[in-house]
Amino acid sequence: MLEQGKISALQMAIMMNPTILATGLLLVPAITAKSAKQDLWLSPIWASFMGFMIVFVAYRLHKFYPNETIFEYSEQILGKILGKILGLILVFYYFHVTGIIVREYGEFVSGTFLHHTPMVVVFSTMIIVSSMAVYGGLEVIGRCSEMIVPVLLVLYLVIFVMLIKDLDMKHLFPMLENGLGPSLKGSVVLQSWFSEFILVSFFFPYLRDRNKGMKWAMISVLSVMFYMVLTNVMSLLLFGKMTALLTYPVMVAARYISIADFLAHLESIVMAIWVAGTFVKITVFYYVLVLGIAQWLKLSDFRPIVLPTGFLLILFGIWSAPNLQVLSHFLSSSGAFYLLSVQAGIPVFLLTIAWLKKKRQQMKGSFPG
Image (tube, rainbow, N blue to C red; front, side):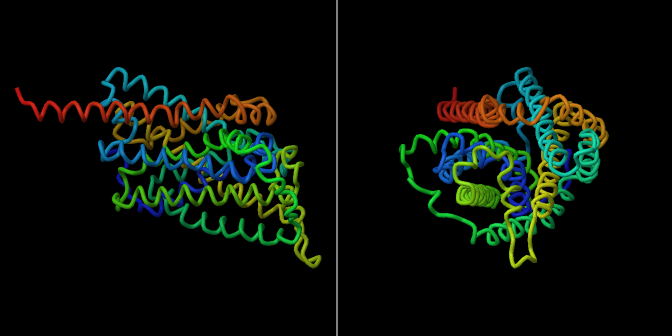
């Protein structure tokens, strides 16, 4: 095995939380509100079923091939040639998706705070920091997440509590005015975020307590759903129909906070949550990409390709979209189906083939000769 480090199932669950939420917390309310309107709080609940399904599929594949990741067992399931082709598709896919995440980070930091800093500098600094964690391996990433993520989640709850006095329950109504259709439509884009839980397939082989892997992955899905619902409710009750018109509703919400003229304009907390959470997200995707390339090329160590991969990620960050408007439009339209086809379609396809092969072997065993 390329990775010698081990993490616990709890560490995996903690890592996956910002891996899904980091970009979602700022972008999800506006994207969901365009379709779901005042029922946007329901959309994460429907979308979470995708997360539960993906975790189940990843775990079943892990039970068939307990010491391998998707790059490795795809060759056993499909054969060497088709498996290599699928692995190459996944390599390019993770280059592209990680580049999109890097671009989202750069757009937010440059557009909100560092207006005069070239975006390539913003990209590069994050990639350099992430590359150090990736070079350290899975245990380093797991321990970083253990220190960072609980603080971020508590800070986010604090922001919500501080906004309670400004929330207006009238914005929730009329509830389900047009039935379940709008909230289900709004969940399509969110399903692409929840489908990112396929990343757990890269961590299951390296768990110290594999028997708890599925349980903690499911708890992580619940946690992500809770924070997405909380984010959508907060944005809706604060801005109402204006939510769909705002690019970063949570950032604007933080500027609303004012308590006794002492606590005000706490957008710096949102900035800290975003940067730290995005660090974990980029690092996890970066690690999965590097590990996948090493496994696809049959390398003995993934560390020599960490820095070259980081350089290419900076380029993919630049190439992924010309500006934030184009990127947001892609993520809220065709991007959702693109992400789902790879992150959900491929694992379900692999599990189906693996299950059929298993059944065939059992039938041959039952009727020898």
